[in-house]
Length: 535
Ligand SMILES: [Zn+2]
Image 1: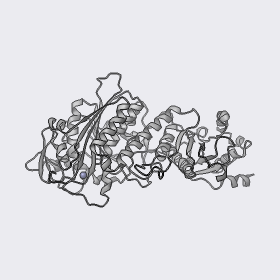
Image 2: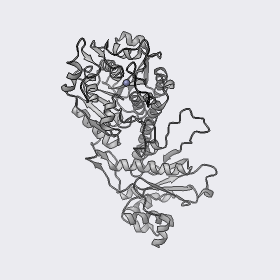
Image 3: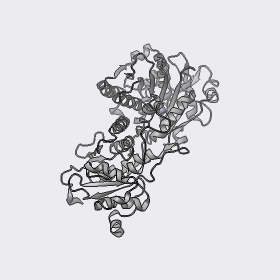
Image 4: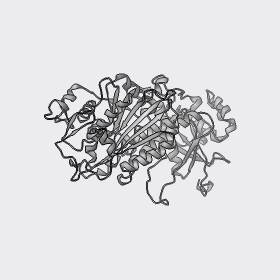
């Protein structure tokens, strides 16, 4: 019997991989993908600062969807895999791809994904909303810069958020002039595209006057560096220099869809950074909204210039805290590669919340110093102005950038600065569930899990409802009516399953042999012509 089963199951399925079986179900599903989650019961790995169980589910869901997509199955139903939210994230992110303006006929048909059964419906919906928000951030970031100008970005974001009942104000150049945002406007001088300043307001709290969480996103829709021109190689990637802005917009979209009971303000300064006869020159002096004077020694350090004014303005909202997010420094990519977002903060508790959220979502953060040492580098050595937009010291570029921003936040305002230059993309399949292209990171982790104190309601490090057990992980499908019964069997009585159909044997045998648990992904194939003949 074992030999017989062995030939059906094939060799062991490695963790995070999938195998597609055909003909298991004679009625509803033409194919079934079996994915391996690896060891069951995985939790938080403290050294790695990651929840390995959730990450396994994301990777497995992605692998299953990819395997089915590869054989042209375009309607995929997934089991919860023990964690419906993580499964939805993995499936939602992995099945979306930026295709932009490709000829409709040449566009890859993206699979439709949905939950199998009713168990975990609420968590699944949360996961899908987060994944879709991140996919939107990916789309905004990957769109070519001539089709994602400050004006177009404002229109897109207004359309989507206004439909969700969120208030979006699009401010123009004259408004910024009235506000004395000389630092922001100095960046816009080099471009013919008019700058915009988005002010987004989501009111979900029961008390509408409750202090908001305030997000600030860097929205440089194309960064050529200005007069301090960048090298031409890979300059096209600078279309994504508005990834911070995209994350803020996507975050508020998800918050509105999830109807979070918080007030959120999103502030997004939008501009291009180009060289021209009007452009700011190295050594020029500009004045920010709080009156501080800035020498612009490097016009490619423009992100901090536009954030400076946005941070000043953010304080007018009496925020609970300010969180800015920006593709700020190449030095962050040098420091962390694409492993994590670098964080600078004046509030240790805020950081801990964020760090826990990173662990749970798989989108990690790492704290950097916000010391006087770096502040001195951008202030003390400057003659003729309060601050320089770059430091003359060697190295520490991300730290001196953060020190620069700190000059525009009052001491008693809790504030976090997220430098996402390393994680913005383009991705090259480093994360199993994010395909190539701009990543939209860290949309899922920042607001929903941490900043809005969503996780504060949960016990840090042990997300609600998460349990990866044999009972949840060994899932037998294709007869919905008997699913519950089968689950009960699955707890401790694996052998019973062997007396049922040959297909159950396939799964059971694998489990017994390897001590692994194999959840199943259910497949409903509606693609004409992709029925049995292709098996
Ligand atoms: Zn730049």
